[in-house]
Image 1: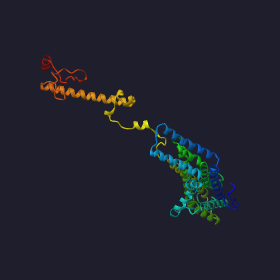
Image 2: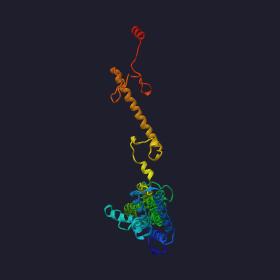
Image 3: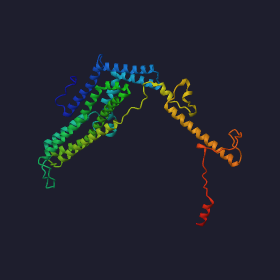
Image 4: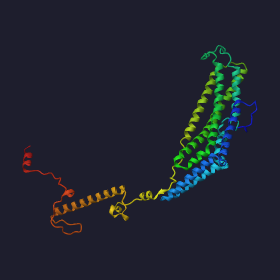
Length: 403
């Protein structure tokens, strides 16, 4: 932070504060990474330990009979490469993370500025904010003038001294919105960039991957919110700055402007609310970021692979006929019992239908092969089907005829 240059005393308040905060945030992000990446630091020991555990888990699972898939091996190599590159190479970390977060909002504003006419898109946003702040100060010194302007009906102020309060409060709200919008997000970005290598190392394990996702969401949420704040401040300048210049010119000409204090206070408060809403919307959008579901890097057990193979019902074998005397799983036993039950019901139904056909024809019962099976016998058990034809006696018929 001592490397930040001292600004001249004549610089505006907003310019001085934002420049100092931006310099300190940049040094915080780059200086912390340099300290963590030095040999023997806590980050080096942490990354070495995590990589050792990661590789050891893969090796132990392979020794215990696991099977490493091509996708799982590729994901493991990519994770190791990303962690080692971003945690040990400042050039890669600065290009992929640091510069994107710190410089992307200003570059986006410069890209869309010429077409959208956003004030300050040419890099002069902070200077324009200071110029508007100085104009507010001049208006507060000049005041709103006399409220009895040529006998016109002017509503009374809410309370005594409201004009001075509104002009002063409008300037305070304007400065607070500008400084907080530009400085707070830069400090948050510097803090996230400082601890970035630790969160990058959490990408190795599935159990800690959510921490890496949270870090990415906060980091890009801060950058996106900073972009939104710059857009809102540019729009505020486009509306307020010409209005203020005209008000100051009229007051210097001696014209009374009794409505100016309330209008300026409303405008300043309105854009403060819009800034807060824009920050909330930007953070809300980025919070939806999720990493795609990745295949487990840990090797898959061979028993799991075998159980995933689809086996036809006719291939299930009873326990005593399993190769090598191996006992089937509970799922296999249940499936085999269901298949056997269905087969028994189908065979019983076929025998019953063949028996009925033979009796209706008045011939002997024939087997499926066409051989005589002797006289028909009465079926019992589940194969016996009682006739559903309604039966009636002679007495019942006579009784029904008399009704």
